[in-house]
Each structure stands twice: as structure tokens, then as C-alpha cells.
Amino acid sequence: MLTEPAAPADRRELIPNAVLAVDVVVFTVRQAPLKEAFQVLLVNQRSEDGMTRWALPGVLVRPTETFAEAARRALLEKAGLDAATWYLDQLATFGEPTRDSRGRVASIAHIAVVRSDDLILRPGADVKATEWCPVSRVEERVLAFDHAEMIRVGVQRIRSKLRYSWVAFQLLDPEFTIPQLRAVYAAILDPSLERLSTGNFKKAMRPLFESGVLQNIGRASTGRRGRPRDLYRFVGPVTGTRERELPW
Image (tube, rainbow, N blue to C red; front, side):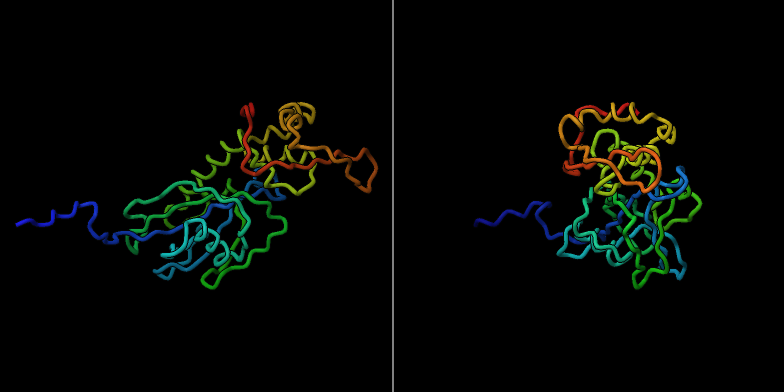
């Protein structure tokens, strides 16, 4: 008598043994002293034990949504930010068994880099406050879960991407000056870049000028005495990369 062979172990019905979450590390550069201009978005919310803690915007992933959809929902529900058109990048998976006291929760962290001058933060229903915190002062906060480690890894990622990609232009107005662009690199990479001459900085950007993705569009009207500064526009894709890394 013939019998059906037993199903391989890897084809048996899966029993959920973990919950998936998404947390978002959102970086920006804001008007502040140079050492505090590079900032990250934090939310203050009540935890299961009744305590309030600062954390990254995050949610549990719904059964029918992608990780990117969950990340955009986290920003909307926790901080009132419409991230529908934002470029999001998966950062890393954080899955230590003890990272969440409620049970086994693995988080797929995402990273975003945005210009925040026109953004209005609106705390969600379970959030007491939202704020931009200087990256240099994050250690002063007691953050929930392993979010301090997520920010640390995120800082490493964005500093690396700044050297080989075009991500810096996501932090600027559509029209900007070279000193404004240089200030972004100084805030994130090295404050000493603020002292780099405009001429030397433009030399580092020469491949972008030659390829046409960085364009001179005229001069700014300052309304004050002195020579108006040249204005520039970036027309390349936010996911673009350089042929050679920057020297800084």
C-alpha cells in the first residue's frame, strides 16, 4: 500500500513566534550652532509600564502592509508628517530577544533625510511631544528599546552616504548657495569644512557641474549691500551616486 510521504519540515504551517515593527530614523539639518545643526526626530510617548520615554517614531507592522508603508504610517501617526513622497532606505534589522519587554519584537529600522524648515510636527494620539534633537545631545536622553543604537547606526550610514551619494541635496531648498551646501557637509561630517574656501569646495563638486546635475541659475537678491551670491539648483535623482568619494 502506497502512502503519501511526510511533508518536509520547512513546508509545515508556520507558527508566529515574533512580532514585526518598523522604526524610522529621520535626520535633518536645522538653523542652530554648527555642532547642534545635525538633528534627529524624536517622539515622547507613554510605554506599557506607564512611563514616558523618548523614542523614534515606530509602529507594529500590519499583516497587509509593506515595511515602507508601515514606516510612512509611523511618521504620520506619531509626528503628523506626510511622508508619501519621501525617499526611505532600510537601515538594519534589530532583533535581540530582550529588546522589548512585551515579547519578541523585531524592528526593521528605516532611515530618511529631509529638509525640515517647512515641516510642522503634530504629536499623535499616544504621543506627548515631538521634537528635533541635536544628534550630539542624544546621549543626554534615556531612549526606549534600542533606539540609541539605531541612531548610532543611522549616523554612520548617513555620513558614509554623504561621501559617495547625492543625499545632501535632500536637505536644501530647491535653490541654494554654495555656502549653504557646504554647511550641510560641515554639520554632518566635520565642522572644519565650514572654513574650507568656496573655490576649493566647488572643486570637489566639479563632477556634478560637468554632468549637469548641479546648475548655476543666477544670483540671489540679498536686499543688502555687497555682492549677491550665486544660486544653484540640483536636478539629479536623490538616489544618484558619485563616481568618486569625497575626500573629507
